Amino acid sequence: MRSLILAAAAAAAAWALCAAPAFAQTWGAGVSLGLVDDVSHRFAVDDFRSRDFSGFVDYETEPSVLVRGTFGSLRTTGANSERTVTTSGGVTEVAPRLTSRVDYGTLGVSYEFLQGDSRSGIFAGIGGYKVKPDAAPAGFEEFRDPSTTVFGWHFGVDGNFRLVSRLFGLV
Image 1 (cartoon, one colour):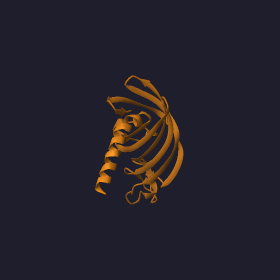
Image 2 (cartoon, rainbow, N blue to C red):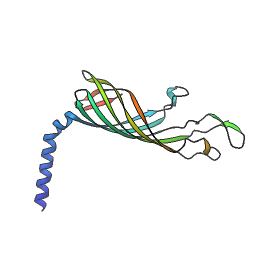
Image 3 (tube, rainbow, N blue to C red):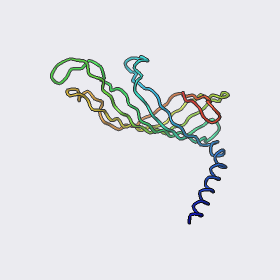
Image 4 (cartoon, rainbow, N blue to C red):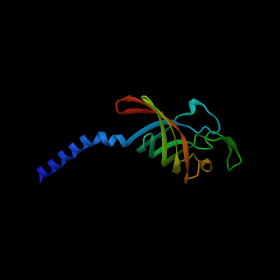
């Protein structure tokens, strides 16, 4: 039985070594860690202190065309965070820093423009987002973001550049 397991393991290792170059031509996977902030009210570099962690898997359907699935989680400030609010007691004051966690999954298509060792691209797709507000100090619970699940569209631009042979940095 042990020799059968060793033979299967050796066959799997040989297949992985031989198939990896071919597999890498059409499939890709990666992770990213970034800083995020809500810029709907104002933009300040100092405010980018929340984190975003995501992973993705993509499949190249044609040269320069990728179908990409992304999953991730980000922590961001709430809509009423550090804003002037009127509490239920009628007192006007500045709300404390209120945060929410957003878990998400997206499915989209990306078209990439190849430029030597770098790529840029445009992407669009659909996504599902689950907002989970963190606990708020007493008296400020009503100003947290609502706990909800929503679906919507996403689109944007991206780019990457080669760091080493098979490792790219993502912008």
